[in-house]
Image (cartoon, rainbow, N blue to C red; front, side, top):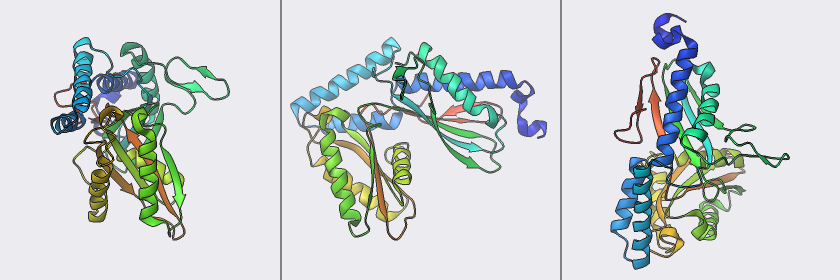
Length: 309
């Protein structure tokens, strides 16, 4: 690879890896302490439209919490979750081979510096690892883009009461969309107060349980206000959002006008004999962040206006 494609930082690969690790550690601190702009704006909108006195009190508590987290430089929720990374990586990014190690090291450092609550428990050992890493953790979802020399990195804090308890199910084609609606409503109602609404709902539709589950989680990464490009999917998002809000679960599960911030759908082609759905939800404190990193390791935060890493 020639020097121009490797970028100036790659003249000293350990130094470059250290810079990349620092960017990722900074992103996790930002995600834990400050909500992304689209989520905060949506919560402010829902707060202004809430008629329930108790619902208004819940929103007031939410924003007091957010303001205190910023003022005290602390995470806005004590459950800092299991960290999941979603990487859209160019194959010509000069540190592609080091990226996964950088993600893990940044997570170890952020556990101490942010701090993040250690949440990772190893199966069978039944022991907390103490640093938020473990077997296949952090989980990294890869999308490789041939020839691109930059990366886009999403960091997502998947909490134990909301995002992690998602589910996937394979229906028959005969059950169709009505079966999807029924299963989705049953699950959202069952979550109730436990998932800390209003929720961001991610619905994945595909050919198998694993495909649908993965798509449902990726749906949570889309910024609120951006619809699925397929007109029928966008119409379904709007219809489900309106119907779920009529259920009246409300902020904090204590009744109110809005139970969800939005519904996002991601889809893949399916087999003629299967109709798979997956559901993931994000709580009101929907903590995700997106940074774009160039080959020279300059970066731009796309999710939090004014943030610098």
